[in-house]
Length: 72
Image (tube, rainbow, N blue to C red; front, top):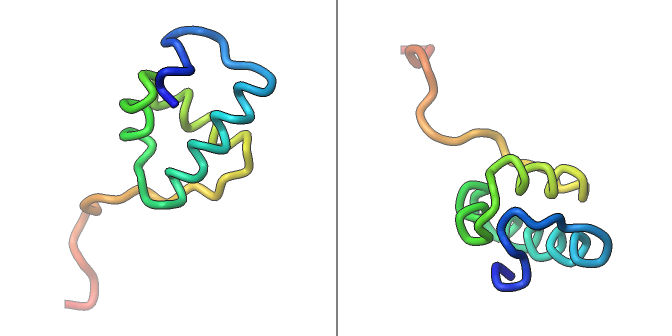
């Protein structure tokens, strides 16, 4: 995938659709947006936009939450 998309080049038409499909598959299998961005040499925002445009249901943010746990 990364070989077909040159960094900074516009991705339109069939190439964009193909890239979106590949990104969707990898994202659905658990790869993070940040990892996909690094793999493709594109920005986080570009990958996020492609996934959003293609109708992908994005996961919530991970990591630690702020504040104390309730119910202690």
